[in-house]
Length: 265
Image (tube, helix red, strand yellow):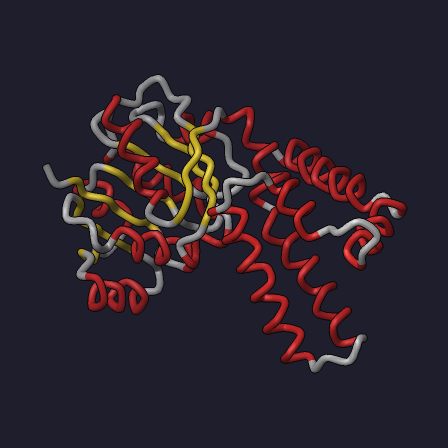
């Protein structure tokens, strides 16, 4: 049976998920957005069904995926609440809004799934946390919703109480990686490489290292040891990092992000 998936908001993340799902023949994708040009462009590209507004979309769709800015979430959800029932499922990727808040806004009319994707989902290499804590979810919903986000990378089912940890390590993780990449690029420039050379090389370094870690039978610790010859150049650099307590600083930074996530929640 074909499932109807409605996207309220087709910005960067919404469009990325639609792109990942477009080849599936078991779903029909609907979309609406204040910027109608975006929706019609996706309709032309992927054949999605254009809905004039969120209420019309909620009426006809089985799964309503909320992909708006967090400050827009409440008015949109309250607007569509009367069109929801226990046969439908509200899925939200809005940051920082708890499942219980959505349940209040929909007056407990339908089950709610909270999802936290990270930005590499934009290139179908994301890592998403999916909260299936709502007791109103059917077995079909529990199986189907994670599959939507597997279309743009990995999807991990976590309890909502684990979402702050996910934020600290994975949600904010791309910024840590880009921060380190930026430092590596600046190092290359300082050592005489052109900025273009350093940038291309560092991007290749991270892409290749991530691919190796993903496909290798060895742990990341073992892979690091393979590059680190006794008394060699790499050992010298890593020893400096350890003297500066860089590993501890990274762990502390992740914990600060985790604690801030708790504060904001």
